[in-house]
Structures are given as C-alpha cells and as structure tokens.
Image 1 (cartoon, rainbow over the protein chains, first blue to last red):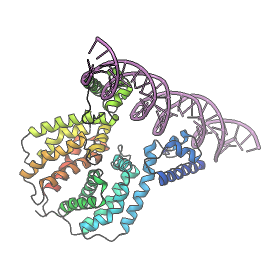
Image 2 (cartoon, each protein chain N blue to C red; image 1 turned 30 degrees about the horizontal axis):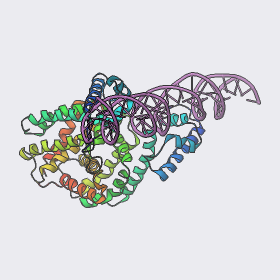
Image 3 (tube, rainbow over the protein chains, first blue to last red; image 1 turned 90 degrees about the horizontal axis):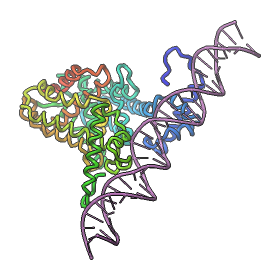
Image 4 (cartoon, rainbow over the protein chains, first blue to last red; image 1 turned 180 degrees about the horizontal axis):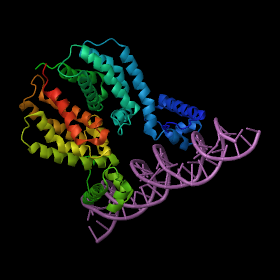
Length: 196
Length: 196
DNA sequence: CTACATTAATGACCGTGGTCAATTTTGGAG
DNA sequence: CTCCAAAATTGACCACGGTCATTAATGTAG
C-alpha cells in the first residue's frame, strides 16, 4: 500500500512489489490489459492474493501503475520532438499517444476514470500525465501560429478536452485512426486558430 | 433483453420489467445509484436474479435506463428556456444538468462510459442524450453573439467537450458548484467568443 | 378444450475482486 | 545472540455481478 511517510519499509517489500509488477506486465504483454486477472498475477508472482492488495489498494491502482509509465514514455518522445508549427503537426506528434490510449476500450476507460484527480490533493499517476501533457503542449501553443488572446495553459486545457472528446466519439465507428486524426484536426483548428 | 424484432413479447414481460425499474428507482431514491445492488432490486421486485439479466444485459444497461430519462427531463427543461444571450446564461441554463451528472462519482462514470456510442451503430440512450444536447445547444450558438466562422454543430461539440472537461477536473477539489461554473464560463468564452 | 411450440422465470452455480484475523518474517535494541 | 514490536504475508472467506440448464407459463393452431 502507498507507504505512509516514516514507516519502515522492508527490502522484501520492494522485491515483492517488483515481482507483482513484472508478472502483471508479462500478462498484459501476452493477453492485453482487459484480460488481466489478479489471481493470475499473484500465481505468476508466487505470492498470496492478500499480498497483492496490501501492495495495491485495488486492481485499478495496479492498472494506473502499468499505464502511467507508458503514457510518460510517449510524453518523453513527444517532448523530444521539435516544436510543431501547425495543427497538423501537433496531431502528428500526438498520434502515438492517441494510438496507445485507444488500444483497448478498457485502457481508455481506466485513463478517463483517472484523468482528473480522484480526491482532494490525491493526484494519481495518470492525472499527473495529463498535467504533464499541459506542460509539454503549453509552450508549443505559445510559440506556434496560434491565437494569443488567451493563456497557453487555457489553450492546453482545451487541447486535452478535444483530445478526449475525439477519442470518445471514435470508439464506435470502425475505430478508424484516420478519422480520429481528421476530427481532432478540425477541432484544434477551430480552437487554436479562430478567424472571427 | 433488448427484444429482437418480430419476437412475440408477452404482456407479463412488460409487467416484470416495470417492476424491476420501479424497484430500482426506489432503491436509488433512498440509497443513491452507487449503492444499487442487483440482488436487492430483484428481491424488492419479487423475481429471481436470472430474470433481471434476461431483461437487462448487465447492470450498466439498467443504469442507462435509469439515468437517461433523468437527463432527458433536464433537457426538456433546458429546451423550454429562452435562447441564452451570453455565456453566463448558457452556463446558468446548463446548471441543473451539471448538478445531476455530478451528483455521484459513479453516475458521472456511467455517463462518461456511455457518452460515446458503444459499438458501431449501437447508440445507447445516454449517447442519444448527448446527441440531443447538440441539437438543443446548436441553435443557441447559431443565434447568440458567438463566433460565426465555424458551424453551430462544431460549436456544440466543443461545448460538450468543455462540459465534460470541467466536470472531470472538478470532481476532486471540494466538489465546488461555484468553481465549476466559473471554470466552464472561462472555457466557453474562450471557445465561443475568441478575440484574435 | 387440448396440444405444443415459444417465451419467460428460476435459482444453484461460477468468476473474480476484495477483506481480515491469524501467522510468519524482519531487523534493531539490549 | 536473543527478544520482540512492527511490518509483511497468508489464505479462507465474502460480496456481488453474471450464466445457464431446467422448469413453468403463455397463447395459438387445430
């Protein structure tokens, strides 16, 4: 469990947690996120079921810890890219991230559920990724050929909102990568480059 | 179960379903949506558990059928209101709807999960509500003092996206009604009244 | 009215996430 | 090294959503 400050964490704790994470990742790699079963994970890790829940409050917390690092690695990639000069380029930069988030309906649902902070001041790792996305895209929006009448933070917020909207709306119809990019482009041009 | 076309539906079917819905609503009224248990519902309705699942594919489908009518009644109200002349007025018009959607974390999650269509061409009652919201707000946005460079449909889409975003971000911090209205107002002014 | 195919209802059963009192392990104080 | 309080682990147990072969009710053709 999220070790409170000042408690003595034994070294085996870290080892057990590592085993659980490793087992989880191997399950996900072969069967996907949705197929993950706690019982399978603990049996692979060679520990009892109760142990799982003393390391993770519930299955969702494990899911967060599996998904957030993936999101962060996509953000690393994105961060290393040159500042995009157009909406199309922004969409292209975000594409790998989008592809991952929509790789499974279940993954999208988990991310959605945790994209806002859960309780006051308890911001989870996935919510942190969204925060980080704002930090990454904000400068893009400040520097590129986009509207200047509102703050980059607000622009980034909107980008996030339209990103979610696009993915939510396109989970039905033939789950088309192309359609999603096109729709997101339309949204972002309207948001970032209004011509009143 | 969603009766396939052309099967003969017996009259007792309707009676049983009505009993189930009524029992569900009574549970929700006293304990809230999250507390609803299928076992309690069937025992209140005086039917077996299996019966529940021959009427509703799963618990989520029941939830949709409980929540969608509420959403629609709020939309009825909203539809009867005069066309808003400002962002503030829009936000005020939407307030009761927002209050309901955020009445419980569980309700918000159910709505989010079903706000996009689930499978191709299988659009659920909650997704229909969002579609309807677009039909209601589109004309507002076309007639009011808002940007004209993009279609009312697109404007309405954005309104929906910012609505979700606002609710998602404000579920943590002290779940403040005032804060939500203020944030939504900021988003919508930026979206509907850009000043480049 | 009867026979019978169709539709509805039943409840024992299962899968799986999550709990908790009891037990074992750990590592530091003396 | 010994002892022991704190930390970690265990697994039987529970809650609850969901399944399905079996049984009962329905209404229609003859």
